[in-house]
Structures are given as C-alpha cells and as structure tokens.
Image (cartoon, rainbow, N blue to C red; front, side, top):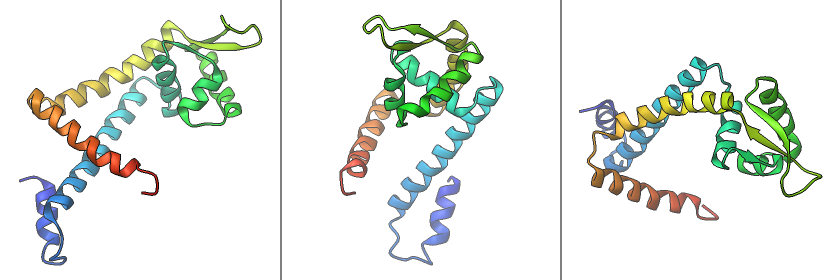
Length: 162
C-alpha cells in the first residue's frame, strides 16, 4: 500500500462515485512528476545550471550540438528575439559559441562547447539515472506496456479541442 492508496481510501467515503483506478493513476502520475522535477532541480543546482539554460543546452544537443537561434527558439516555444539573451548568457559561461552558418553567410549558428556539453550531460545523467532506477522495477515488456498506455492517454489530451 502506498500513500496514493491511503489518499483514495480517504476520499471514497466522501465521493462514493470516485473511480479509484482513475484517481490512483492520476495521483501517482502527479507524485511521480513532482519527484522527477525535484530530482532535476537538485541536479541542476549541483551543476550550477539554471533550468532555462539547461533547456537551451538540451535543445541544442538535440539538434546535434549546432543550430540557428530561430531553430532553438522554435524548439523552446519562444519568440526568436527572446533567445538572444539566453545565448548571450551561455556564451559568457563558455557553454556555447556563435559560429558562421555553413549554409547562409548572413546567419550565425549557436554551437555547443565541450563545457556546455559536460554541464548538460551532468544534469541529464542524474535525471536519467533516477528514471532508470524508478522504472527499473518493471520488466522490459512492462515498461513498453506502460509507455504504450500513457501514449494512448496523451493522444487524447493532445487532441485539438481537448
């Protein structure tokens, strides 16, 4: 029995039409999200990396370590002009550098430096280790089933007009 089971049992007499499976799943997802967020915040603090800088390095790493500022802005859901301050801060820290574009002489790309990759990986590795620790209690086929079930739920949540 976990704390969510206790939560559901406390609420069933108050809300007799409560579906304990729905309440249990939603409450567990919320607890898990809070736990993983706290782990990420500690990992970022340990490597002295603000969340917005980590997100920018993460987006850059996801593009092979090099991207146009407009591409980073799109990945982060920001206005292109807003990315400049982030890039400036990361340049000052030595985590990225600006380099001429290889495809357009008028454009400047942002490239991840070794220091930037190390800072990003430091936080990423801590978060990934915790995810593996938690989901490691499941067999591979159970992890696949969980992922598939969550996909079905998220497809409904992401449907336009939801």
